[in-house]
Image (cartoon, rainbow, N blue to C red):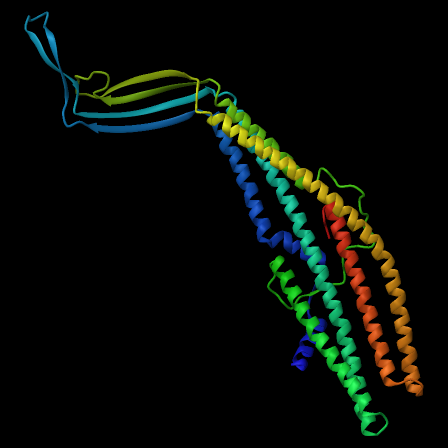
Length: 430
């Protein structure tokens, strides 16, 4: 089991292609399904504007109808024909078969400004969708930056532990030879072998964690090649400037503000429905019997009309719709204040954490330097016979722990920098 894992580690760390954080972000922005969905939503918003503007144009409609009655309508005329002096009798008022073809051109001259407000609302929908796309890209970039940093940190842990296992393996082989020659005790042999097995266990655990983080990262950026490894070429975390205040013009706030304006225009469009409306139409008909109900031939004739309408009472439906929109604006306003407050706190905490990790990195570098010096001293002392092999192995373990702790602090700083930049409203471009 361990040999197979070791071969896998050697393959992954020695021959695999590396992907930088910058390249990973390019793949994210190009392939991520959530971003693709929001791009489609932006296109939908653009089409919605075209739909709203269509109300500015007149409507041209064609029609055709046929109607058959089981009985024809008749009326009895109660007077005589003035020419013949005889009774007129019965005349047809509604023939059994009625056929009509028509074409109409209609246009609403005034709708209480509802059309204009609806167009403005649709245009705000485009701005809202654009801001949503930018904010989603930034949020996913933050997620990628944190996930990639975790992957790289785990990968470096794997490298440190692999080297440590190789060193312990060499010491274990030498210990077996020395024990066979009667130079060291069995206790020393067992201590070395126990330390080796423990290090192998830690190595396998690091391998599992690294593989899990890799798959999670590649799934986010939609890459199927699982042989890819992280690159140490990272975003300039040590030189980036962190703003001291939250940008109130960040895309999330732009999205909320645009949504509020969109609701306001929609509310005005609804209010306009309570105002008077004026519409006109002209048309042409070709019908049988046409305007002469007693005839039996097609007749062509024109029609024209104008209509004024004013809603007097709708059961408070219009006011209820506007009240709902008012509540929605209040909800968005509360969300805006809550988000700004959360980002302010996040920026303060992250900035303080960056400052603390800078001091911890300096201390970690000094600790690692001291651990390496101690390891070298004990190696020389062991060769000279003034220190035991156990002392040297313990020094190697101390150096490994110093390396891992330093990488842990560097990882912590990267996460703090990413969180601070995101909280401030900076666009994350790696």
